[in-house]
Amino acid sequence: METAADMKQKALANVYDVQLYIDGQFVDAESNQQFDNISPFTNEKINSVAAGSKEDIDKAAKAAKTAFKGAWGKMKQSERIYYINRIADLIDEHIEELAPLESYDTGLPISITTKMVSRASQNFRFYAEMVASRMVGEAYQVDDEFLNYTIHKPVGVAGLITPWNAPFMLETWKIAPALATGNTVILKPAEWSPLTANKLAEIIDKAGLPKGVFNVVHGYGETAGASLVQHEEVQLISFTGETTTGSEIMKNGADALKRFSMELGGKSPIIIFEDADMERALDACTWGIFSFNGERCTANSRLYIHEDAAEKFIAALKERVDNIQVGDPLDKSTQVGPLIHIDHYKTVKSYLNLAVKEGCEVYQGSIPEQFMRGNYIPPTILLNADHSMQVVQEEIFGPVLAVMTFRDEEEVIELANDTRYGLAGYVWTKDIQRGHRVSQAIDSGMLWINSQNVRDLRTPFGGARHSGIGREGGYYAFDFYTEMQVIHVALGDHRIPQFGKK
Ligand code: NAD
Image 1 (tube, rainbow, N blue to C red):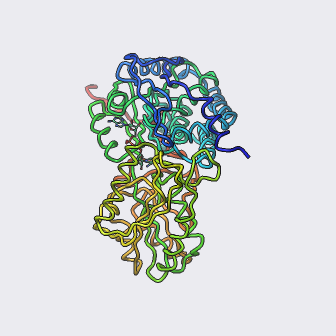
Image 2 (spheres, rainbow, N blue to C red):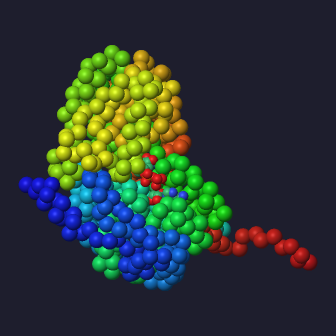
Image 3 (tube, protein in one colour):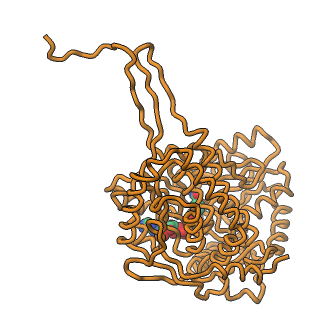
């Protein structure tokens, strides 16, 4: 079996200074500025990254617009779909490089990144298939007078702004529908996870797409990101990230009347009734909060356990917390790795201090001595939590679970809905009527009954309230990435008013 050292070798073989990818070429930023990319595992520098800004976004927008008006825009759909499938094949061919690189860059365990990279190729294949088979219009017949029909047209240049928590998968989740529906793309990856975005640019380059169709501009959110949002030639912005950033972006894009899709933060509840299959609920609950190092938007970060089952469940939860494998992200047996960046580590740490001040009992696993240089937070549960606390109301985005008990259905629905978020939710009960009833009463975009988060790519993905605006996924992505046009055709001599006729 490959060791962590073997994986590190594989990652290092693909580490070099990261440039921008504009108009089919890897280039430095116009300003020649760079920033350092830091390892979550050692807090040492990994490499330098070109820091793009307005000038680079201008160049990318010009290239993307030219490609949209030219080669890509004029291409037949079947040929475009060939390229989308070709990208999927090339991703699969490079899994062995991509997964270690992503783990090295982000601290996500290799077991997770391996799955996420194969999800990335599925995203391309899925949208190739969806566009070929489901991007269809509607026709409305009006007696013998009219036939009115709709078509989907690509919007133009799509600006995609992504976070660091599952970079490669989330980037492809947006790029695949944007390209498959015929748009051209400028990707602005998160500054803390730049490596695999450039690997994707290499793959897309190798797939032979016309130049300018896909561009990557690295850089800070406030410079490269903001310029992308404000650019007149960029018709739409698909954003995934924090709620506060989303609202800032909407303000910045207002003058240019930008079209937005917003996938934002979450503080999702898991509700476990006394009749649930406790062993499976425990598996799902621990995985749902501690996988992805707790940096998962749909994490079940609030547990509501029925008071009759609480004592036993919490004891079992503590045992799991004690035994979760905290380790080197490149080690195949690792379940929890280091957080992405020292700044994020400090934020999560400050929430743990706050939890104590607010009156929680903080129960934690441990970090092996040899990993102390990394940004490790051990799996943590906050006991005696309640809804007056910030640690219950706010997204912590680390391996931290707030634990609460409840007495009845009405109470738990009220508690579940008592945050500003509404991304996901999880309900565990063997009473199927109660399962549906409670699920439908929860204000979230997505809900799972008797399951952890298992994605079905055909279904709408997105959040309610402060967790998002709009839905991506399935054919719902067509609403965002295409402009629907209706064509009204007169079939005969319907009446036309005759103004001014004598
Ligand atoms: P973030 O908001 O800090 O950054 C996300 C991206 O936005 C980065 O690329 C950043 O450079 C860019 N950005 C920052 N300021 C900007 C600005 N003014 N203009 C344009 N771009 C700007 O988020 P993060 O810390 O990278 O990611 C974690 C957050 O993402 C969490 O809140 C998590 O819940 C959320 N998330 C949501 C989903 C979802 O589908 N709802 C999925 C994953 C992550």
